[in-house]
Length: 122
Image (cartoon, rainbow, N blue to C red; front, side, top):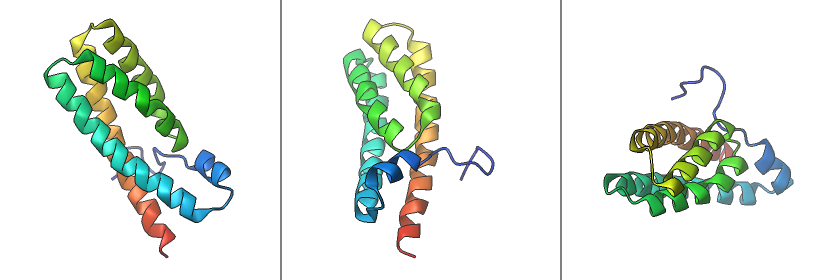
């Protein structure tokens, strides 16, 4: 499930350089991302329903390092914008649009990472 043609959304170059070939570390980090990203998206959507700006701001802030770690560069600007807008408590429509885009791309990234995790078993 990749909307980006043959290219992946994730780029694990940074993770692989940090792990220095430690496959167990890579697996742990990827599993952590899958669990955390799914949880974060769910919390973002719940916070959006009640316009909990502080929670949206905090989750967006918390997501930034993990996006860099797995090379989801295309979302970094969106997450930064979401964090900024939520901190200012404005532009509900833009926040809704950003969360929707982030959700869609993270779902795809999670599938890519699950495929990567399967490849470790081969």
